[in-house]
Image 1 (cartoon, one colour):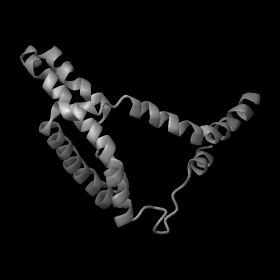
Image 2 (cartoon, one colour):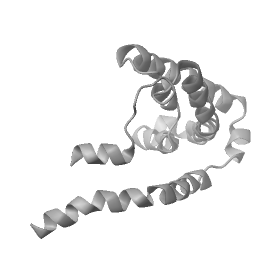
Image 3 (cartoon, one colour):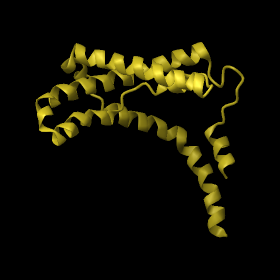
Image 4 (cartoon, one colour):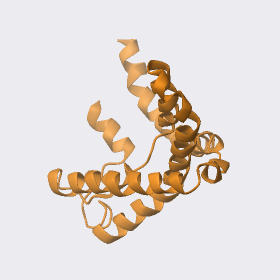
Amino acid sequence: MRICIVLSLVPGLLLSGLPIVIPFIGFTIGAGIDLGSIFTAGLNGIILALFVVVIGAGFTFLADKYVLRRPGYAGAALASSSGNSIANPAVIASIDATYKPFVQTATAEIASAVVLTAIFVPFITAFVARKFGSGRNDGEHLPTIAEDAEVTR
């Protein structure tokens, strides 16, 4: 019985610390980004980043807007290359040795795409939210984290 009372207090305690933790999470993600990888990869990395954003945002935005019937900003936010994709060329080369000569170039190009999408996707998401609306702009009520925690109790 006592453990149920204690566990019911935990979400409220954790939610109060959320605004404090978010900048630190952002700093740790940003600290691992190397802007020099853009120059190392050159034009190929920039083109790869454009493909990731255009194709990725295209599919996810359309799915969010027309399949899920949402404003589309969540789909636009998904159009980023994740940092763990940088390891993919090395993993593939460890499986098939014929790809070993391409590992460094591919890693630099993917790192460039990760950096560029990390910089530009938030601006694209903000544009989509302004153009097509977000839950806050068009009268739709989006639950806050605290309200969501209340529902799950």
